[in-house]
Each structure stands twice: as structure tokens, then as C-alpha cells.
Length: 286
Image (cartoon, rainbow, N blue to C red; front, top):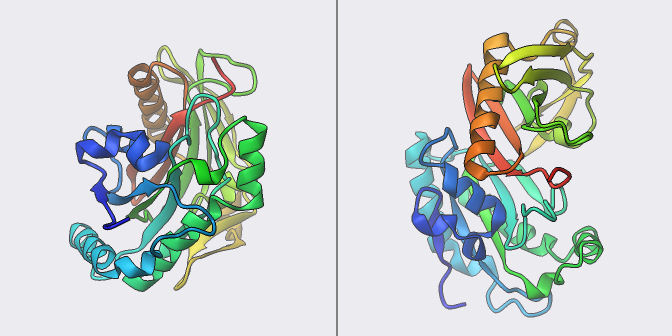
């Protein structure tokens, strides 16, 4: 490893899953036409647990320069970023790796970003990730490439997970939307009961609505994030307005068509603006 290769989401190389991993490649394909927050990826390399040729901290100059450039695009000297692992065999049809590798939210400053990158790379060797690989018949962490995505953090007012087909039943006629207040950690981590909205795919009519008591939410703090009680007046209020529900369903329908398979999206609304944070296949639906 003579130099650390940095690839920006909008560059053609960022569509190559063998270079930037499945997660970043999926976003790279969509960044030109969809509201994907800006970011860059540290290209994948095979890093054995005991054979790191150079730790990430030796590449401080390159990483600092990329972080500064991202700050210019975000309008901040110290932009808040999300740092996520992106394995070469991640977010495929057979295995999504959802939650198996580390993610660090609300990271600020070049030194903190470098530390988060190193931890993401190390997470490929965690017991959780290795067990998941064995269960899905995949190579051990030493046999696959691990990239890391550094992306502007969207300080979400509302976070959503959107399914273009029902992952429980395989129903392809409806879009399912889960939504809750704040950042997405409480939602994807399962610690909050989210709202559920069901939209008929053919005409984008909202046909189901279950507004939950959303007892907790994740917020940003000076270092990282934390889960807090949701303000009482917000707990039983719908997290999404009807036009936002329809916009999410339309996006899911479009991406299902372009990806030629049912998709699972992570999206966020910040000050009324929709952002696409992740798109991957629904591994339980053929």
C-alpha cells in the first residue's frame, strides 16, 4: 500500500464495487441523479488483522486534504460526517451486511475522521462480522477488500427506511415506509417503534397509516450521537406529511425500476429536503 486511493462519489471509479465496496458503489451509481450527500471513499485493500502495511494515520495528509475539500462543498471548516465501512461483497443480493460493520456518526475534524476510518477497517475482523460471513458462506475478512465511506452527515429531522416490496411477504404491489424523529440510529437499531405508511405502488395512493408512539430519538451531540426521550408533544405526531410519503414511495418505485429488483432505502428529511443515504437490494425478496 504505497498510497491511499481516494475516490469521490460522483467519479466513475466509485461505481466499481471491487474498488469501493458495495455500499459506496451503490451510492456512486445514484449520486449524479439523486439527492445523495457528498462524500469520498478510501478504496478497498486486503488488510489482514495482523498484517497492516501502514496504519491509516500514516496517510493523514491525504485524508486531511480530502476532508478539507469536503468541507468546502459543505460550507464548513469542520463538516460533520458519517464514516461507514463498505465491504467488496456488501449490499449484494445474497447478503446485505446491514449492521455488521461499524458506522460512526457526527464525526468532526481530520484526526477524528482518521480514527473512525481505522476503526471501520478493524470492524471487518469483529466476531459479529466474521460470524455473519461464515453463516453466508463468504470469505473471511482477510480475503476480501474493505473500503471506507466518508460522507456529509445529514442532521435529520426525520429518518426513514423504505421498502419497494414487503420484505415479510414478498408483496410487490406496495411500498412500505418506516419513519421516526431524529437521526436513523434508533430506527435501524430497533430501539424505537416507528410510524408505518403503506403506499400502493401503481398510483402512489396512501392506503395504510399506523402512527406509533415514538418514545426515543437519536440526536447529534458534540462528539457522536445519543438516544434521548422524544419530547412528549412529538411522540404521537406523524413523522411524515402526505407529500413526503408520496415522494419517498416515488423514489423507491424509480430505484426499483433502475436497479431491476426490489430495494431497501435509507432516507432522511432535513428542513423539508429529502436525502438518499443508502440503497441496497431486499435480500428476502426475489
